[in-house]
Amino acid sequence: MLPVKRLTAAKTRLRGALAGVPHDRLVLAMAMDTVAAVRACPDVQATLVVTRDPVVSRAIEKLGAVPVPDKPDADLNAAVRYGATRTTADVAALTADLPALRPAELSAALRAVPASRAFVSDAAGTGTTLLAARGGAALDPHFGPGSAGAHERSGAVALTGRWPSLRRDVDTPDDLVAAAQLGLGRHTAECRYASALAAGYRDVMQATVSSYDAESRSGTMLLDDGTQVEFGREAFDAGGLRLVRVGQRLKVEHDGSGAVVRVTLLTLP
Image 1: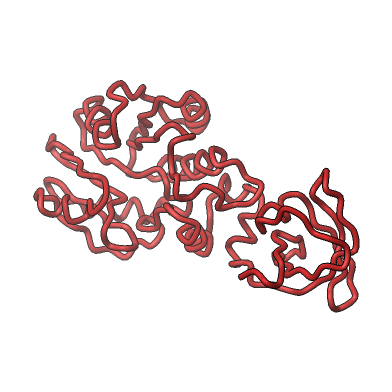
Image 2: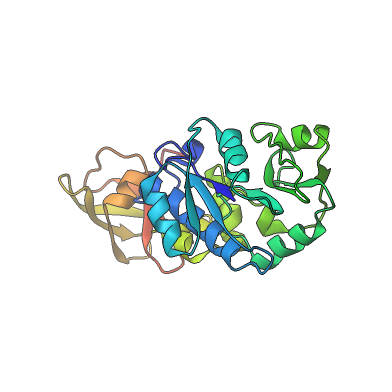
């Protein structure tokens, strides 16, 4: 079972992580990759997604998951408790922000769950990515800040397997970089500039503006090695610029394919 907020309200600290990618598209892509990995796990019999967002419901149905209307419409814990009422079998709640999740790691964690309740903490060790219960035991979720400690105090067993993709939830742009380095699922990887983010914008050069069109917020630059390159609206907006002039010096960041992903003034960090 995965609880998913309305896309417009989810993952606020991740907003703007990928230039040119709408926030709701990125959040949905991560949820779809998480669901796809869960569906591919041989230890999962059914995948429920508790949500009030119709876009999420339609997308996960295409992946073979079952949408469950989030009737409490309160918080994540209320959604998890409600979803757990839909089954009498062993149940697990998983966060929907695990775009690098590997089915084999999820399988290993589920098999490690003892006769009652257990949880998997996130990479930072303070949050929770998986909470599971066997034998009709109540999930008793305590998701939120400091949830790992809260789950342990409530009697849940902390599972100690390494499982890097299961522990790599994504709340911030840095988290997304870390997930990308593990290997993103197809939907998240298809988001524009995800590959550049995975590289950490390592490739940086300097250039001089050759032309600029204010209406389209795009133009051309002459790199210091003499190569002329174009930059588009997304790269311009990613650098937080309002205007550039012909002859102005810029710092240029591009991905491994050579595509410009951000331009900033040399005087800016």
